[in-house]
Length: 81
Image (cartoon, rainbow, N blue to C red):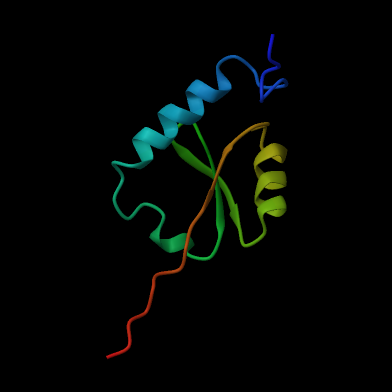
């Protein structure tokens, strides 16, 4: 029997993250104000953000979200004419 790749994962956590990610895909421009940051999401809402992954995760955990979906938001590409 193969061990689970996420042994500490709670049964509903992955499903919740997938639902949040699917919902996020329909929210055009929601994260545009967070360019260059990590955004922590849970229950279809932004629960924390910071330029540092660890800082954003800690903020979310301090707010009671132990395992938020962490999303890196890229800066827009600039084109030079």
